[in-house]
Length: 265
Ligand SMILES: *[C@@H]1O[C@H](CO)[C@@H](O)[C@H](O)[C@H]1NC(C)=O
Ligand SMILES: *[C@@H]1O[C@H](CO)[C@@H](O)[C@H](O)[C@H]1NC(C)=O
Ligand SMILES: *[C@@H]1O[C@H](CO)[C@@H](O)[C@H](O)[C@H]1NC(C)=O
Image (cartoon, rainbow, N blue to C red; front, side, top):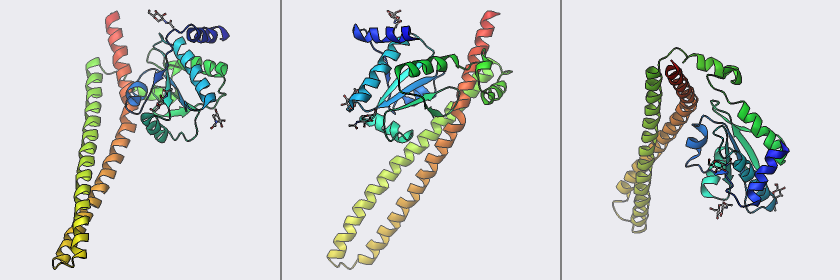
């Protein structure tokens, strides 16, 4: 254990490429949530010297696992915009914090161990060994096993079709939410202009005051209605994601397993 960690430090010392993947909210889902390998993630503030030191531990860890496809070592710079978004999403209020992800689990979990290199290194190894797959069902939690059995009897084609259908539904729900966002923005601009117009008419004590006021109120009601639709669309997208993403991983895992069995025959 000490040896491999020391080797990691050595890579740094001799200036070899240190590798911890920098994560932002833009690529988090692709690299972590939809990935089939576990991830070990550090949220840190680079302006704090002791946290910067911890980041170096991560770089060393990343260098150590650079060629391992079985673990993603990732870091989140909490002062960057993409990092702040991830802090909000995972409720990281005071860095440094370590989180991990063990697919096909759907949630990112809190690491509660010590922030010492040795403890973290041990945890990283444990996380790798716990990798759950169809050929290593023993490594999966009971819930994962039950979910995976559902897919055991399907053919590669059926599994792929199922994955494609889920992905399509996810994409459609995201597109609907984006369209609503744009619409809310447009209506909002319109309402802002109408508010200015109303103010001007009020100041001039114009005759058309009542009709302008009514038009403005109608517009505000529309803005509110669209905000509610957007809220609903966001909730729907979130729940779809929560339901589908872990299934997608299982389906893909099962498809790969079936494909490899076919090759062996
Ligand atoms: C820097 O981070 C450490 C935790 O690693 C914390 O205890 C300390 O208060 C922080 N320092 C400042 C100046 O915020
Ligand atoms: C990773 O693989 C590359 C190319 O095969 C090699 O040059 C490099 O030294 C390896 N790094 C580690 C940390 O094993
Ligand atoms: C962290 O993010 C800030 C803001 O984008 C950037 O200026 C800084 O260089 C980053 N630090 C590291 C160590 O990546």
